[in-house]
Length: 220
Image (cartoon, rainbow, N blue to C red; front, side):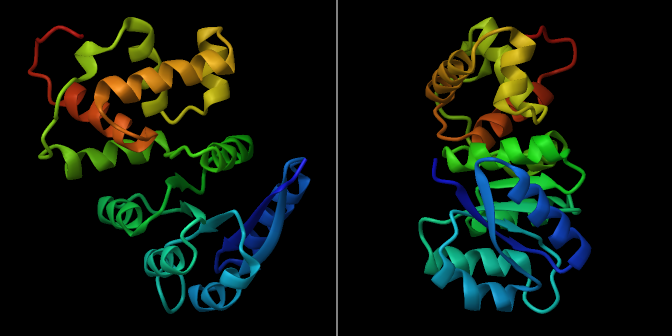
């Protein structure tokens, strides 16, 4: 089995080493490189061509957000997962706008981080539950479009709620006592009904519609 090749961009040497060890211990991953700043990443990563980059935001010199934008231009196929201690709404929005495919906080448990990496590799957009709620302010003013949470079946709403809480697919399958394939089928149907294409947009629509429901209104 071909291992996922990952690179880390993180200014803390201790955290770089810890993340590298975590990745190398996973049977399906390998840490290809670890960079201390954005400038080093821009020099090394285009030639190394990792599958996924774990990116911090607050870096010495160029910010992680600017680095994401430049890496995406140089490496259109790379998948970038933000891994940061910051949950500022502007940081979240700018990271995703720059081309990041997910946003996790550094307090994420190791197994959840590994699962999020696998999700990114499979085309998903993992986000921490606490981060998802901070995104709502940026998207509430966006038109809801056709469809909505009310159009979802009860089990689909249950899946979407767990997605909004930041649960990886395996945890959702366990909580609902269904197979991983069934969870993926539910998610495909959710995307279709909400007219979205990834987890981030689905969670944003869910949180925006549920949190803006008038007081006293019944749950869908």
